[in-house]
Length: 380
Image (cartoon, rainbow, N blue to C red; front, side):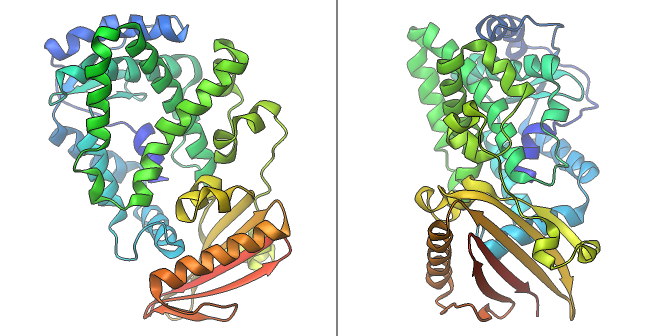
């Protein structure tokens, strides 16, 4: 999933190291993060300074190297099909633009260095450094490249892992702010200014929510776990991470270790395992994805889901999305809400039969007990 991968895939730079006043804070920030997180730094973390233009250029280059174009195209296809982004929205460039516009710094788990962006406001320098160097500590102890594997085919699980990483770093950052109340007003104000900047309205509201989820809901999750189990349990979150955003949204289900997602298998969607050879892409949207698409109330009964993309005749593509719910009534509630959303968006009457939403998009529905199957045909 590109949104999460941008938190894990950090740019590589061939430019020489540049030290200036922005990097002067790095050593003290690492010590502060280490003390607040309770993880002694195992090594120092070099600091570099980069412009936003440099960050964007290397980010695009790195994405091109690590992601096959077809994967991003199909991820965009799925998000457009189910309705998480408008049909004509340029998902990749939109996300990169929003990410670069708000970045103040980052930690690179490949090269093991910390970057400060040269345009970062003075009021944000300390808190950004503490946040990103908490990621350095996470990497030294738990291995971020493995923890945030961009090649995962379960976007919901990957989003849950991102919420652990970003929530943990946000929690440490907030503790650093609380320890220095004379600076907290300016620092919190600067953070809110970044979140509410003019760049965010340039992307759809749904993607804004997805971008903020790991930081905001992740912090709430980490706070809940810490309150119940203490700092030691925060290490265990990385060793035994949540496997779905449902566990992030409902920390008690993670703490009890009783919840297990029931994601459908490919054979269930394609009516036979032999058909799996024609699958082009798979993903799981999860409770959070459905809550963004419809509402938290509708999504609350999520038990599992799977999306598959399959080539179809006449240059068409099939997108099949099957969701599974805690009860039949919750499955019907989801189906009713989803049909109403599509009707409002496309002004089309939808039913179990094929319905044209546009000249290039058709949809059909079927509920079977706790399962709801939504199928799209995309193309001429």
